[in-house]
Length: 114
Image (cartoon, rainbow, N blue to C red; front, side, top):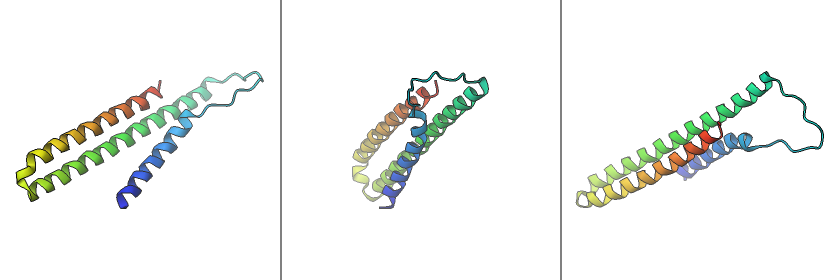
């Protein structure tokens, strides 16, 4: 149960980071006022900070997941050495899937910074 609390807290934090980045101002018929360079720099720095924070959260989540997989796999191999090959194969496949999702999330975070 505690693991699901951690996962839901992580997803909630990622949602909080991604929401301001994805938000757009409503389009109106009024002419837009000119934005100064200082105001534009503030907006850009907030977007960059959100992307960097999101990338950091993705890396922390992936590190936690792969570390957990490694820990459980080694414990399982110590209990049943005769199935160590099968456990190692499953561990490597799971770690590869986590890394693939991590790279995808990092690409998404970095695309919002452009």
